[in-house]
Image (cartoon, rainbow, N blue to C red):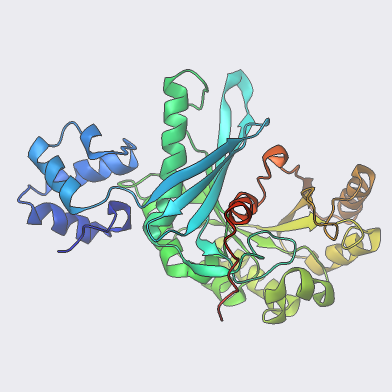
Length: 372
């Protein structure tokens, strides 16, 4: 078994078992090894103190423990942590952790995870969308982003810098770089491992997949045994505007997307969340709020209203607070459940792809066009 360049988080259970047995170790070492990876949050084989030294040395020679390395990290005033990772092939991705204060000095932490290096959807307001697509991430590259932040929180708590409680991470959202449902197989393998009692042990209902609107995959998601959450990046209530803001709408227009969301709800019993980023003068009028209410009428759903991040792109600026509040109130008047969500990490440009864009600009590296 040639495993030298492979990472254990990329291994299915059967492959981990085969590796352990091929090294002459008893089968119970498999559970010990998985426990160190997913519960002990080990970042070196040397930390695995209940494994024989010879076994640890053999593992060190045969396989990698993780498949990404933190290259750059920034922390915002609101506690948001943004990390740029380097992959084995030199590609880069980024992830973010949002921190929310809780009673008793505790904090609730949500990690936002990438599923692709770059993105092929091409939304004009999204930094990642303007970088083009490079490749899908492997299951291990997705998992390792979660394990990195769990390890980060463990270290913070051990040094008394934070109080997270036993869970550390409360939620995982697949909402970073890329379109998660375009990398369905690796995404689902990662979710199963992160949910497994022998893996990370995160409840399925504490994980959410955010999609730009891949209708067939939304239907498939509704048939899965694990009932993870669904968030759809909507941003417009008519096809003409959404074709521009979310170009995949040309393939799966609203009259296809909304029935798929209804099918997901009927299959899971879980309401759908719709992300609606408000852009000044584009989708923030009272008339557009009414159109959104008509579009969603009768669907068990929730709308997250998000004022756009303030960026140098003058075409996509946030509305005034008064306009945002008026939009929210109009949805409420029309019996649409909506919550105003403030952007996080604005002082560190924590929006999707912004840190990676800065790196590409600083190094002179050219952006790559999306592949068909």
